[in-house]
Length: 257
Ligand code: ADP
Ligand code: SF4
Ligand code: MG
Image 1 (cartoon, rainbow, N blue to C red):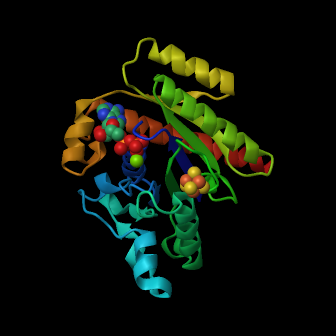
Image 2: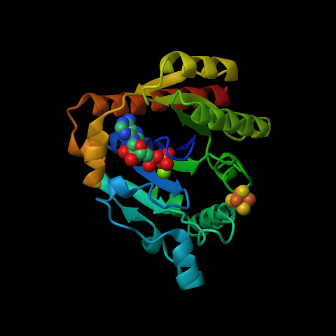
Image 3: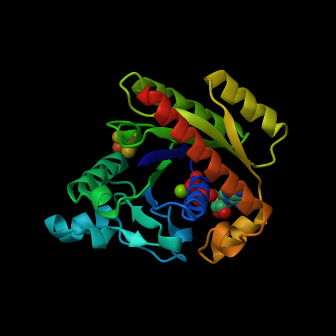
């Protein structure tokens, strides 16, 4: 099983990238996508905009009676969709919500039951506090990919995430395996992101072009892989999927040597 966390600033395109990646990977693999943003909108493009029960909502409602069927929902091409959910805005700690959701999935043996080849965690990276760092701790995710554009605040968040991951690296937890450039058409964007990656010791593994096809698909609650499979942007996501698998498999092999 390959376990990947996709981090990045709020609004940068994590959920769009992750759900398109999941859809592209689903052409060959069994994929589970776990949304770890209190907004709980990570998987909507895999579910035709259908709202699903979050793990936290179900925990509140059904307490110990929660089953896997309550929280794991099948989306596009069999992708397994989970939303951790979050507390009432302004009250409570979103990080603790993620921890509770992960513990529940573990207790219910979600990975053993569904046997996904690939698990994708879609994580908000504006603050990398205890809760939002959860996917990179305790062996949940092994490979971290950071989504950024050339915008200053996106690069600032990406740098914080990179540093947070380094703090856990020595304990054998996750490592940053690459940077994904989600184009915003900022001046000198490629150079800015390349320079950031170099300074942090990472590689820019794929550029995802800015495309209106993304928004058109989003209106339908679909990924571009589903709605417009023959477009350049769909190829960007497929290329990203291919590279991510290559990188994760290579790093797994190196870790075994
Ligand atoms: P995040 O999950 O990081 O908060 P989203 O994935 O929800 O961000 O994306 C925010 C908005 O940006 C969405 O409305 C989405 O349509 C748009 N977007 C993301 N990536 C692209 C892209 N490559 N081209 C055009 N629009 C994009
Ligand atoms: Fe919880 Fe993190 Fe928010 Fe603090 S910053 S309240 S730990 S989610
Ligand atoms: Mg999101």
